[in-house]
Length: 344
Image (cartoon, rainbow, N blue to C red):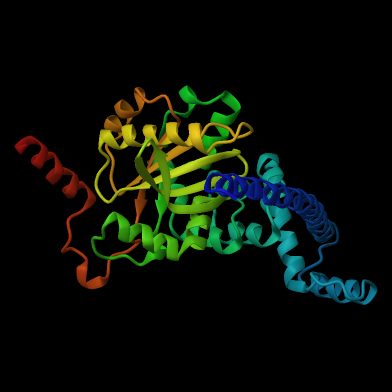
């Protein structure tokens, strides 16, 4: 195959694999909802019987023993799991909205949310995010520990998707974009160059895909684009199985600058003209920066005719003990940058 044909084939391959994966996921979701509905009903029966007959904890142990004698070889009916079913029912019996979401989330993730999250609005966020992003139990735990809900509430998403994409695609793209990405798994505790950051992400591409969310398929880094005799390179290129489009990611190690949006707009033009197939939706760009000024981003995206999102990333969750109090805060860094701008 010629180089261009190889790239086109890669995209075809990703689409076929995507369809296979989506079909498997649909079948799994259907089975999951059936099993969760069963767990909910068993929990209800236990609670109703305890209330009606005044039974205590012993009934769950007795029930577990008798169930396992009748339904030989079926796991999942230990006393502990029956208690979890009871808790599952009590958690969602008075909130139909949360109940509907919970029935779409795997059992392990459900238990984690019940154990770790107390506020109903926060529960809704993690349930919804698990459904939309396909979070595994490990990823969900990491998101809860990283206070993803708090960052979601504090940081608004910045993009121009409503202006540059059809309504249905815009809504999906907004859901796929985060306001902040947690790259703590890289273990970076000192300044690095953009290429070093990119290399570390490639070395940890599996963790990166989990952080980006469900649907992202990695195509390559330093992805080459050509225009006449000149070459250009995209830091990271993905294909999104749900959005059915290419997603270009540019990594920056400095605060957002308006020219970043112009460069990304140029890359998206080239992607749409030379790489995108006729069945693909318009390519989307994501610019990742350690810091951004929301108003500056808003102005920079106004003139772009391509869908671009700008998000911050966080490299470390906590500072080493010996560095606490010795490094400037985010606000102090921002003030310093403003002073330098005034001096310029």
